[in-house]
Length: 67
Image (cartoon, rainbow, N blue to C red; front, side, top):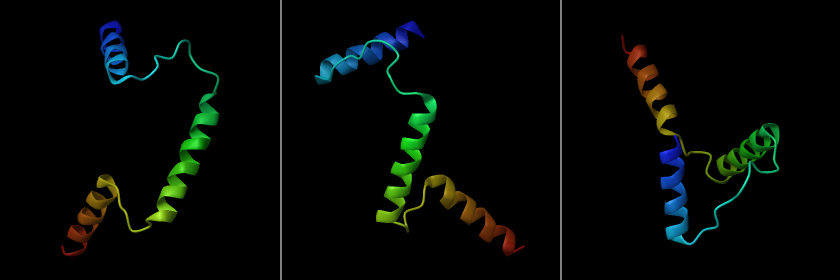
């Protein structure tokens, strides 16, 4: 795991981004809430956009209906 962290830090440094220190100041609940709001906003912009997972589910459901 330490090797992975070091590789990510090297990539961030190479691309010019800052390497953050510590665990941050947001809680998991705050991060989840933010992610859900962003997903909702994204879906409002393009409601027809389906994830790969959603496309596969629809494909499977259509296949099951034909049987």
